[in-house]
Amino acid sequence: MKQLILIIILLIAAPGYTQTVDFDLVKYHGLGFLSSKLEITKKLGSPTNVYAPNYECGFLSSDEQGASFVTLDFKRIKFTGTDKENYLIEEVIFENDSSINLTYGEFILNCETDSNDLIKIFGEKIAKRLTNNFSGGIVIFHGENDEGIRLELKNGKLIKWGYWSPC
Image (spheres, rainbow, N blue to C red):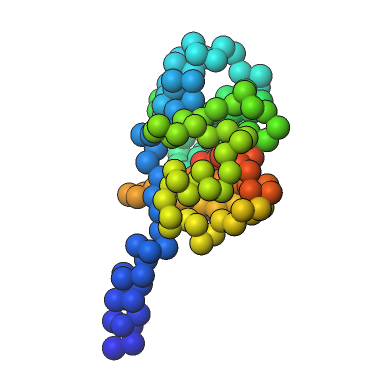
């Protein structure tokens, strides 16, 4: 009986504490969250560095997924994927660089984006985790998968956006 009550409480309470991210709304210089290596290099040129990320676990782990993942590193933005599948925007570093912009639907994310902007973009449900001078990270999950994004803030300003998957 206690288990049934706990399940009901979790089902009722969970929507109030979760906010979701829609990967289809994410764009960088016209590139979608998922893009081919050809699309990326046509738009951004040659990466500064190309390497195997060698993650131990998660959705970008070569061992766990049975595929050879490659990271295309453009210093402040990284795309990771395989030649057979598309590459995803794995990381964007905004800190101290106003030229880096990521769009989420109609909103622009950059080093000037603050906690209040993120609440407008992702909804009031994340307000409980963000304060005006918040420093740290929060994960916003995708609505249908066990993946999401990790936002890092310093003194209430967005410094990093990253793809997140569980281990």
